[in-house]
Amino acid sequence: MLVFEDFTEHDKSFFEIKIKIWKRETDLFIHFQKQVDKNIFLKDFLAIIQEEINWIESNKSKFEEILLEENILELVEDIATSAPLLECSSEECYLMSDDSIIYFPITEDDLYNSLYIEALTINFDKNNKSNFEIFLSCNPDYLQENSFILSMDENKNIVFNGFLND
Image (cartoon, rainbow, N blue to C red; front, top):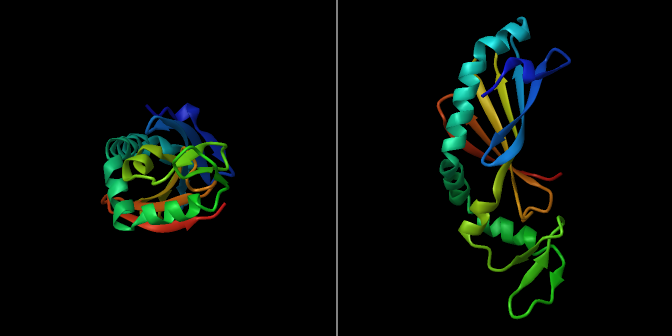
């Protein structure tokens, strides 16, 4: 449960907190565009923000579906094969940047089980409508320290926005 006092305010333009989502600790950033007292605004919107986080927590499969529609598995395999090839017994395997060893082929289940939210940003526009940016990473690090970027509007429409090279 989000508690106002647990937030850190930065430059009077956004707030930050660590939350647990999809079984991992994640950075949550909240940005406000409207020129109001951000502290009061955050307090007023805490219940709505919590509700949105709960929805994301309960609907990981919807994010997976979007990635499947974008044929992400092929991209993931291309990135993973850029890592050093290891000599494994009878399987093709690679050493990832996080020192994990992955075996080929990577299955959809392997990919989906590896996904976690690296960071989550909620942007409130001047009309107090929210838009989410979700940065997905993998463990093991199939993406070689990179992330997928997805967005979600207040109607829960999820869009794949590409790949972020760190």
